[in-house]
Length: 228
Ligand code: CA
Image (cartoon, rainbow, N blue to C red):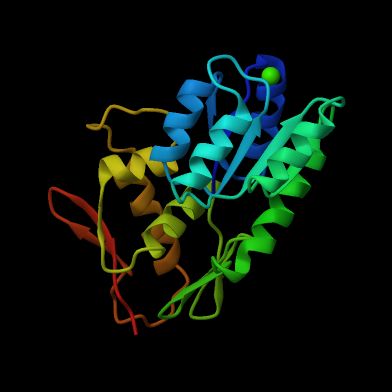
């Protein structure tokens, strides 16, 4: 799952980013409000962690514009202790939660997880396509009922493909979504990662008719098969 972190204080951003990555999240960080808004409105994030006091553009104004444009990505606001009015205003503008600074990174992670669980009514936490099941919260993947032991990156890649069965996703789209920095599009990290996933699924030894659910589309990218 992908988190956008909009926070100008490098130290705070650094520890939040490290803590979230440890939990398997892909984290993108913006250190000002202008870039923060651009990324938030352009990218597809599962959660946005948004500081209120930011250079360029403040968090409440970003929140307001996002909601006005129909963006419903869950947002956690970061506030200073004395910004009670901002918190109330933020919640009334459509923020999903807030966290007062200073906080422990464990608290942020707990809030992010709780928020993801809460929005599970709208966005399923268990994805199932054919015999492949993926639980976004427990981060477990099973194929024909057998557990597949994936790394965080492999998990995120499978999840990304599974969200749009039948749709071709380009290597660039996959890189942007699953890797948190800009790679040279000619890199083969995506292909290598797909090969590892296929190998792990094949090694379970179930009779899947010899077909991997992840199909290569020559010269373009990959597609998750629409399985019955
Ligand atoms: Ca700040």
